[in-house]
Length: 236
Length: 210
Image (cartoon, rainbow over all chains, first blue to last red; front, side, top):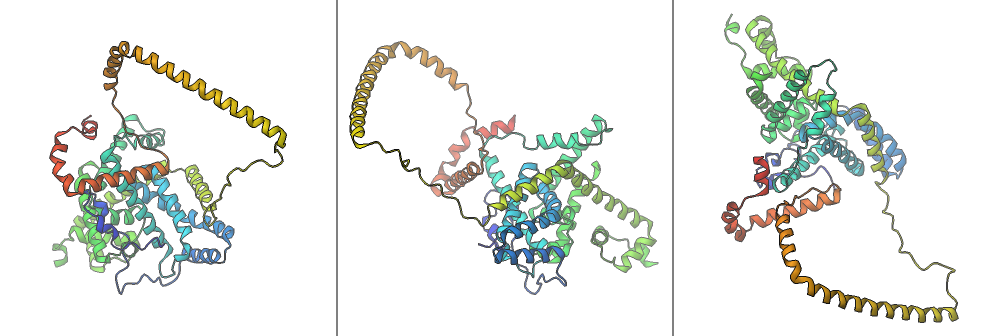
């Protein structure tokens, strides 16, 4: 089983429940002629190759130890991306854990021509999309409570101690408005925006992750920013 | 002088912002124009300020939720889960008869007799009690009808609430169940029943109205 090869699978399910996330954003093979061969292998990719070698030789204990370093490098970024996708801390936590476990389980299928970051991000985002879809489906049928209320309380508590209740309330409103605006973006726009903005990826890297052309990524990014400005402009 | 008249449009300004953020070199004519034109420079500053604010707020929210402690706990959790990767599942053997506690043959025959007698007695008592209970319940049934009907009325006030299982297996079951439901809704015969379904109030609609 390979984890990152899901070409157009999402597209086949698109439109079945109106979830725009189902668009075939992540999981496509890179466009022909645009191989993601990095000029030089990054440190994390080198580490991933080393871990792959250890796993192939059956030295699982050492591989696990080395994998801890990879987790430490990518964890915060992964959490940011997952949280912005799922807007629920527990879900994001699980999604990140699942992504790392999946990466380790399938490390033998990792290939050098993919930067490790790209490979990992694809796995993470596919997991997040699946979770969003499952949640959307559950919400259609089940009575549910406020998911983010506990998270919201935690964020409010963690605000600067000198901030007034009004300030906290305003910040909370701003956050929910921003989340609502991002949620209103088209599936591709949202993915591109999140990867660039919260995942610190360049348009070129997003292009490799998503399989879209770099110019298309730039267009999506611009449209996403314009839409966000239109939705939030007067409130920021 | 002509460059001053042609202001940078929103898309060009955004390209400049993306290039700056990615650490790329700015398009020289655009960079030159930004340096010369205060109106475009102000627009650029406003645009990059907005984008940075969106980013800072998002990052701050995540950092508040995922503290260093929580990230450490997450790392430990990942470590624990990785321990099970690549290991074959443990098979727990079915408990067999304990060794060395066999009853000697003479005693065993005696014990078997007593066991059979006790089982027969138990069966007889059970049957007798069951028959008497049935007789009594039949006699009381008429008297209970009124009480049952009132309690049933009370029970109708309680709304069943569908809850979400917390274990991963329960969630997976839910998903499979919901997939089946949705597949059933897509079937041609079910589609004809959808108008009737729309006439029926749904729990989800009521919950959203609240």
